[in-house]
Image 1 (cartoon, rainbow, N blue to C red):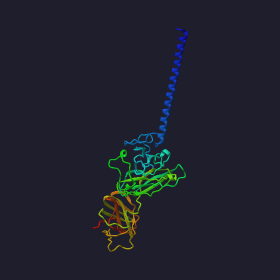
Image 2 (cartoon, rainbow, N blue to C red):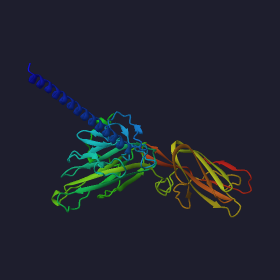
Image 3 (cartoon, helix red, strand yellow):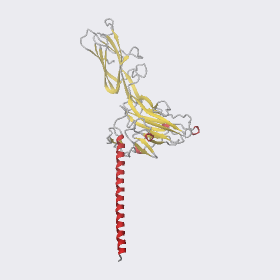
Image 4 (tube, rainbow, N blue to C red):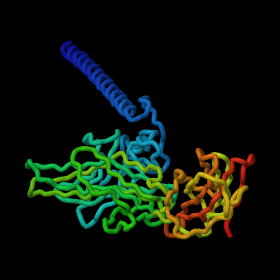
Length: 430
């Protein structure tokens, strides 16, 4: 073997060995870069996740246990917030920030715990997360509906447990975003409103759950019992829509409604509508009394065991009802200017006077207590030293067909400064 050939082979082997070394180093560098890149992506995701946790630590505050795969932000079942944006809110994920969005056929992303509805006579809108464009009222989510070149009718619904014969306010922030390829566009309405169905109506069949409920629903099929807010159009500015009514069942249904106009000939090619920060809260009784008008109804047997404990400057009235009911007392105290004679007895008082057609002339009233109870007790203080106390007990209760107010007979009792003991009388009339 010639030296040249030997040198040539050895040289080739050295060259190949060098190339193999460089190739190995290249793969090591590539592997290092890949690992570094993966690590950075993981760190970024953790950092983003922390932005949606309450304490900023990146730890998921709560995990939903409902079998639904939430699509935002990371395809898991993380609840983004543990506190509600509106204190006392009875809705589940009312502010749309406590849960992510779930996927619903055909290609919709719906705020967690809400149900979509849309008209099938019109083109079906797309349901997406408004935060994709930064359109949120309270971080991190909102519900956006959109459709290019066509109008649509749709929204969201949810049912909530409430106390019957109590007033509630449903409020949601919304606005519309009409757009154009050829500005300036003409004005169009968005026809947005919110509603409460107070009888516990629900449009789903028994057993239908979030994954398999039907979405198609025509606006005219909402029952006439829905109490709606006025329709309004608010472009580009989050604005509250609200309505209030009395619950006529132990559940109510709240509704978000959008039916925006478009006008391609006028330059408006789309009209997105957005909803966020919805809440259902109990509010004080909005009227002065539990009466539907100024007339005091005749006794109907719902109120029994009416008693009065009369002392100087104070009266305590108690009664029972056959069903759980709210509480209020109508009363008037007449100061005694001379010794009581005639039908008013001296030491206590007396059998109730039965009146029909009594109206609220001169009557005062206690605040309405909407907590439903069987036994009712009202204390009236700040009364004169000597007085005739005339009163009517009121209770409002849920019956077949709605809420009804029952009244006791009009009863009287008398205080007497000369009496050292408290006077107690049973004031049930015959």
